[in-house]
Length: 113
Image (cartoon, rainbow, N blue to C red; front, side, top):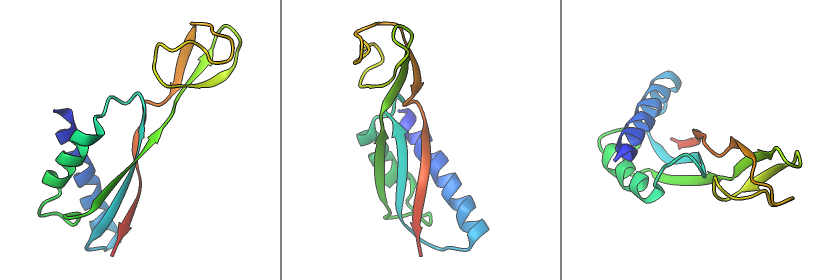
């Protein structure tokens, strides 16, 4: 389950931020995760709770903000949102799409004390 290693990476970022900014507790973590990032949010939520034990984020709420999949259609030139990588262009029905968004994952912000 790669969600466990993602949660460990989030913990490392949080711990570094706590040392650098002098906060002692995180009550909420908001993540932006693209639709195509390949992250199972339920598994990440479970892993987050386990990995954060004993850290400044123990007991913190994890909030996931799903970012849409975006693509450029080579047939009509439109920048479009798609739900699945193999979806046709919603503007023209063309099948030549280049994914341009939805693969990212980042910590948007932390609520700290």
